[in-house]
Image (cartoon, rainbow, N blue to C red; front, side):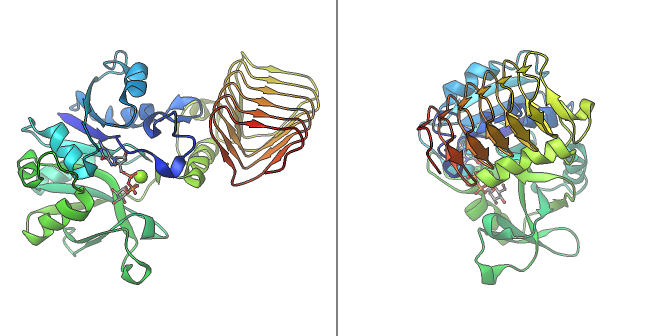
Length: 352
Ligand code: GDD
Ligand code: MG
């Protein structure tokens, strides 16, 4: 069985972090995001190949994952000549498929029971099965209404305030029958959410919902990207290294160099090669990437710093996201919701 991972979006809401790092490989605790999705797909032994549907910076992704050596499943890359939208991408990547296929948005992290989703799809002999999840505010998602038998009765992408009728949204995970792909026009941008799903409902085809009540997040905005780190550190989503060191613990790589007299508060994640000088404070929910140097008396608080950063003496970085190779001058103060792109240099004493 094959899975298609839709990972061709530009990640605009995570800019500038995604200018040089496509969203599927933004690091979560030092690990490219796609690894977490592959972990989930591996739960279903039937899935032996993952087709990565890409168009934005595909080489960067291929460089990391290759053909999937060591992952326990094969990876294939399908690169669209132009962005075809979520529907066009499924058609382009899945044109030669004949069996049921699992389709996944490339930016969702969840512990959904994929095996159970597949069982429901088969029991109901569905043309399409969609995973739904309840959220507080469905505005930023696809709102999905169901009937008493668990069939999808309405799909409304990005509803307006007055159109919100329920709290279940499209979790971005589907099982589809390839025979339905024929109705997706070839080689033109087409949306699975705005066109394909509504067309299934109009034609009265068996379109079934699987409601997932457990952990689910779309990492595609700075706030959610910060949140997912907190969720792992707090044990709401189980992932390394907090699965073994325990929720709320401090992870400090044995390859990090922390001077005596550093105030290190948990939970936090300090990666290899990090150097933290005396008098510095690392407050809860901080993630400090490989080879980053934190100088004397600097304060890092609830921030995520990608590799090779330098945080100057007495600088304060609070609730911020810093890309790779950022240099923060001495006594600079950076506060939420600042997001700095790779190689940003902030002059001494600046305030952001
Ligand atoms: N290959 C390819 N080509 N992939 C694409 C394209 C494209 O043209 N456009 C978007 N994608 C990928 C993105 O990389 C992402 O992984 C996924 O498709 C969804 O796109 P987003 O841009 O992240 O959409 P969204 O988050 O606003 O909404 C979608 O996800 C929500 C759940 O997170 C919709 O599916 C909503 O209905 C859903 O609720
Ligand atoms: Mg998204």
